[in-house]
Structure formats: C-alpha cells, structure tokens
Amino acid sequence: MIRFVLVAIGLAVLCLVLLKLARDLKSANVDWKGVAFACGFIVLAFYLRHATGMG
Image 1 (tube, rainbow, N blue to C red):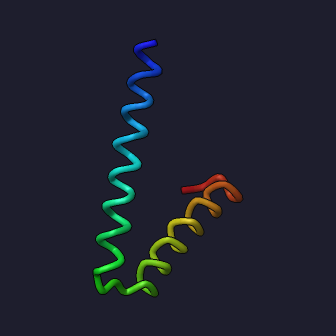
Image 2: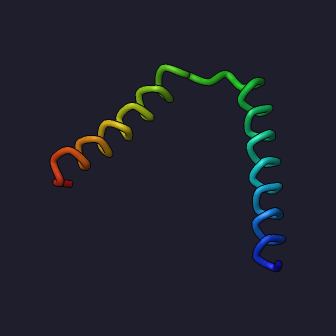
C-alpha cells in the first residue's frame, strides 16, 4: 500500500513537471534543429552500442 502511494505521488509530481516544462517551452525561443540533432546523436549512439556491442 505504501509503495502504491509513493508511486502515485511520484507520477503526480512527474506529470506536474512535464506540464510546467511544456508550458515553458511554448513561450521560449528554442532551436529545435539543435535539440533534434542532439536527440538523434544520442539515439544513434545507443543503436550502435546495441548493434556492435562496443562503446
């Protein structure tokens, strides 16, 4: 029961943080090409780690 309450509180806090982040990103001037490049680089690194077993 305590675990369920802690998970519920954690999910509520995570939801609030995500909503605040989304609200802040809407009003901010973000370089989305740079963000997409960084995300793509990270995804490519994980894929190559999985495919080759190195790194």
